[in-house]
Length: 161
Image (cartoon, rainbow, N blue to C red; front, top):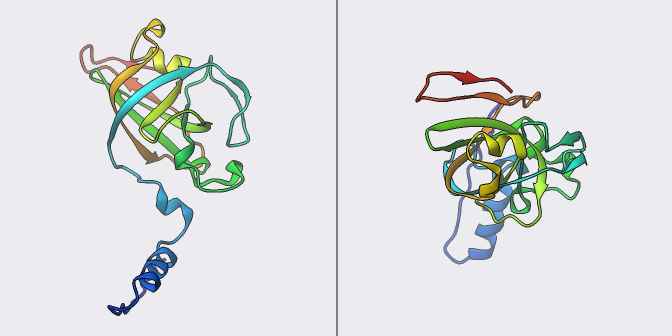
């Protein structure tokens, strides 16, 4: 269901205008720029335990991603829209991988993502530590948020998880 609101804005009310725009913005999920490509960098991590979405993770063996704290919009990250079927589609060097958001990266800026170790290894040797110039975007993948196999356009092969 789509709700349309008609707003009348008067010239002498810039603060009221800002408030109306904020109220008309909708839910917190509207803050996630779905399908908007960004350029940035990727690092990797190997934490295990409970991720910010409240589920068990093992970043040394699972395909997943931690995104910048700046994208999280709720006080309780377990309830954040990022944990509701949102993944990150990462492209670099002719390869693309889609991984579910399962964690928060407190030291990342808004264009920096922290891939799990096996996800990072699909793009570069672990010893490299940082991949600059990646393209990534938030995508909706449904409630399961399963990783999508990577495709290699050079060999035409698909590598499973």
